[in-house]
Length: 353
Image 1 (cartoon, helix red, strand yellow):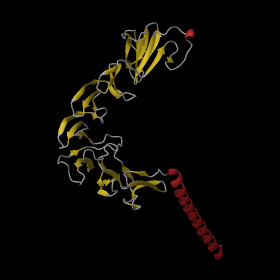
Image 2 (spheres, rainbow, N blue to C red):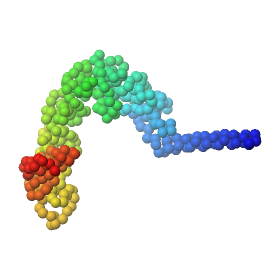
Image 3 (cartoon, one colour):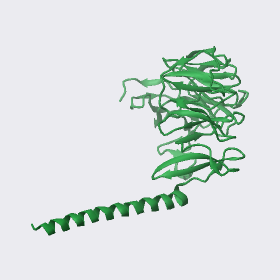
Image 4 (cartoon, helix red, strand yellow):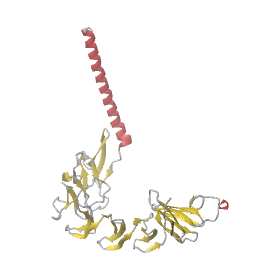
C-alpha cells in the first residue's frame, strides 16, 4: 500500500473519531439541558424562609444544593442528599450526605454547614440531640457537635434505609445491642427499658409496638407496658382510629385509649359453597343453596363463621374449604399440609392426604 493511502486512512480515522466525540458531546449537552430542566428536575423548594433547595444533574447523577434567596448565592457545595427533618420542626440542623457517603449537619435557616461530613450514618436531631454512627459505634451529639453524654453503643449496622431512626420521643430513644436486642434509653444514655425485645417500633398514638419472638405488645412512651406480649399481631387500623389486636384467630379494633370499638374485624369475607364467592362480588342466589358458612381472613390466616356470625373455626389456618356437609379441609402450613375438621374445629383425620 502506498504511503499516501496510509496517510489518508489514518486521517479519515482521526476525523471519524473526532466527529463521533463531537456528536456525543452535543447529545450530552442536549440531554442535560432539556431533560434536566423540563423533565427530570424536581421543582426547587423552600426549606426555610430564605433558603431554597435546588436540584441539578450531571448526566444521570442528581445533586442538591442550598441557595440563599436574598443573596442569590449557593451556601453549600453539591451534595448527594439532604434529609429534611419531618419529625421535629424545632430542630434546625438536618443531615446531609456527600458523594463519598459521609454525613454531617447543616442549618436550614442559614444554609450553612455546621458539622462537617464525618459520620458513616447520622440521624436528624430530636429534642436537641442527634445519633451518629462512626466505626460501628453509635453516640449522641449536641448541636455544637460535642457529645450529649459519654455512653456509647456498639451495634452491627444493617444498611437498610427503612430501619427505625434513633430519635428521642418525650425523652426516650430506641437503641439496640450487638446481639440485636432493643430497649429504650433516656437523654443521659441510661437504659430505661432494658434491651430484651426483638424489635421496638416508632411511636403511634402514644404507644410503641414491641415484639418478642412471635408475640406482640405495646409500650407507652415512657416505657411502661400498655399491652403485654400475648398478641399474634398488632397493627394500625386502616382509618387511623387505633389498633387491630389479633390473638388466637380473632381480631378486634381498639381506639387510641385501647378501648374496644369493634369486637370482631376481618380482612376479607367469602361465602363457602361449592363455588366460592367474595363478599364484594354479585352472584345469583336463586341458583345456589343458602350460605351456611363464611370464610373470614385475618392477614394470611383463615377461619369460618356461620350465617349468624358465630366463630366456628378461628382464623389460624392458611386455607379453609368446605368438603361436604359440616366437614372442612384445612391447611395448617403454607406448604399445603392438610387435615379434615368438623364444624367445631375438631380433627377428623390426622393422617393427611
